[in-house]
Each structure stands twice: as C-alpha cells, then as structure tokens.
Image 1 (cartoon, one colour):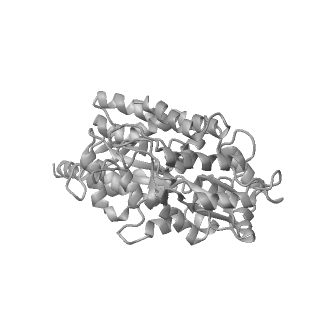
Image 2 (tube, rainbow, N blue to C red; image 1 turned 180 degrees about the horizontal axis):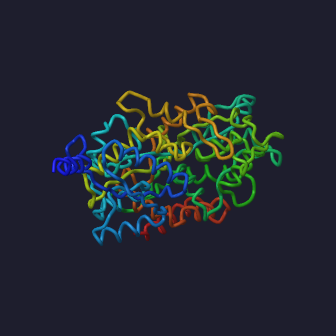
Image 3 (cartoon, helix red, strand yellow; image 1 turned 90 degrees about the vertical axis):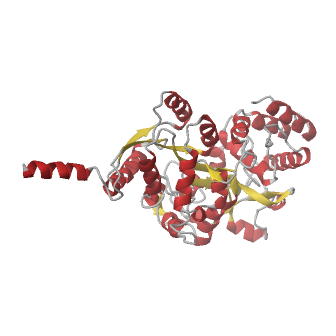
Length: 447
C-alpha cells in the first residue's frame, strides 16, 4: 500500500513544476518548415519541457497557408497556443480576435520593453500596446565596394543625393554599371525596393482614416530617383538573382539587397559563387564590401529603414500561462538557438537579457552562417558593420505602421500596381505627375 501511495505521489509530482501549476501540452505553429529548422525548434521545445514540464507539439505551416488556416481554426475554436508569423498578419489577426493582445503585451512587459529595438517594437503596437511579441527581423541594406568609393573619393551613400552621385561616378558601361536596381514588376524584390525608397522620402500611401494619398511632390522625388537608378542599371528584368550575380562578378559595385547575401558574399555557398577572381570561395568581396542600413530622401532627412519583422503571437484559445512561458523561453534561454535557424536573416530584435545589455547581439554575431562552408558572422564582418545592421532595426518601419493601416498598405503593395506604374514611368510611358495621379486612383480602389 505504501508503494502504491508513493507511486501516486510521484505521478502527481511529475505533472507539477516549480510554480505549482499543472504541466500542459501546448501547440506551436511555425512557418520555418525546412527539416533542419524544424530540428532546431524541436530541440528548443525539448529544453523548454525539461525546464518547465510543459510539452510542445510543433506543427509546420507554410507561411502562405497561415492566414486561411488560422481563420478556419478560430472559427472551429481550435487555434494553436502560439504562432510564429510575419508582421503583416498581426493586425488582421488582432482585429479578427485570433490574437490575445493583452497577453502578448504582458509578455513584452515581462521581458522588458527596453530590451527590444524601439522601431520593431513600435511596429507591433497600437496606442502603446503590443499585439504580438517581436522575435527577429532583417533590414533592407545598401552594399558597395569600399575600395572603389575610396578610390573615387565618394561619400557614404546614405541619401538620394549621395547615392546618385556615387552611381554616376561608378557608371562606366559596359564594363561597370553605376547601380543595379530591381525592375521586374512581378517580383517581391522590386516591391521591397520601392517601399524602401518611398519610406526613405517619408511617403506612405495610406492615412489613419484608411484613405489613400501618395503625396504629389514627395512621390515625384521618389519616381525621379528610381528612374535615374534604372538608367544606370544593366538592361533586362532585374530582381534578386541578377543584382546578386552582377555584384558578385564585379560588373556592378553598388546595389540594394537583403542580409541573406552576407554569407554568400563571403564565398560560403557553391550555388552562388563569387566571381571577382578565380576563387569562388574567396572572401575578397565580403572584405571589400561596406554594409549600410537606412536611406534618406530630400523630403525626409531623418530617413528610414524597411524591415521584415517576424513575431510570436499567443492566441485567444491558448493555455495562457504555459504559452507565455514558452514564448518567454524562446526569447531568453532559447533565443540563440532560435536565431541559429538562419542568423543572416534573423537579426535579434531583443538586444540583451536586460535593458542596456548587448549579450544577445554579441551571441548572435558568433552564430555560424553559410551552406557549403560555415563561419560566424562576426568573423566575416567587422563589429561596427554588425552593430550598424542591428541599429538599423531601431528605425525600422513599413508602410501603414504609423497610421495603423498595415493591412491596407500591404494589400496595395501586394497588388503589384506600384511596381507596374513606377516601371511604366521609368520606361517613359507617362510623366511623373500623371503617374502619381494613377497611383492614387488605382490604390484608392483597394479596400
């Protein structure tokens, strides 16, 4: 009888952890579905179980399926406890009642608001309340050959004016083109580029009341800037593939890209060989590349940085306490492991374990990147470059964030109308004033 009693007590003890709460099983949806990335997340979940007693069921969900599946699960009362999602899903999910806004905001408070990059935290907030918990981000970057800028005495390209001056100085076709800007209208790469340029000049297509307004003069400045860059770019339909190839072979020495180029530029991926010399694994290109975030237009001297932000969201069907613990674990004890999924594209938005600390940024810089060969980012790029990229997140934004109209702004950019009309203008189909009028007319029809 004593043995039976002991066994019963032991069984109860296994379901209870330090806080005295019962152990729960929680469900976590993730769009990081590749096998190696799933393995990393599974290891984090197992570490969480070991620490808390809670178990985690990980469900892979492709990013383009997340919206429909979440809507269907909400209707059925069967939402997961936690979801990883892009920032574009946050406002629609919050409005639909899918996200538990107060709980997500409590997690941010518990972790310490001052430990997050201000810009990306602001992207999740409405009236100072965070609808989701920022996890990682990447900023749009400017890359250029340091040696050539030094040789020609060019200023850092941080504004429309300095970008154009540098591109004109470098432009010597067919040997070298002054720039490579995205021109393929059906590619998201062009959408990202254009949104960065509009943001840089303080242009948003939406107002707080949901109406559309591409400012006439500011938008014309963006159009003229883009057209000038296109005229100094290689011919053809350019997107991420061509802009990378031309930078890697030296026929372009200046372009916009994403941080996913950082490991490839250091010769760590055979499928994207560096071709500036006879060694496709050379680090000569990464050693000679400066990386900048942020850009300022003539009507917005403070500039802006386009940022892709990924967040965690606790849902309204969640086992709240266990879900909060899991998110906080992924943002603390498990943070480095989660960022290791793809360090070159998952920048830490929580800079340290306490306000004023940089232990998460320092740890992230030591994570290895690459495909066929691997090395820590901190071995490939100097500390000031690493810090500058992370600092860019503090001024990160997207269309519609400040106005509380991210959903509408996303519909406008995803419709392709901006890419199409801007490209037509650059090709000479109409003048700038007529193009702004058309942007406003067609975007106003989107609801």
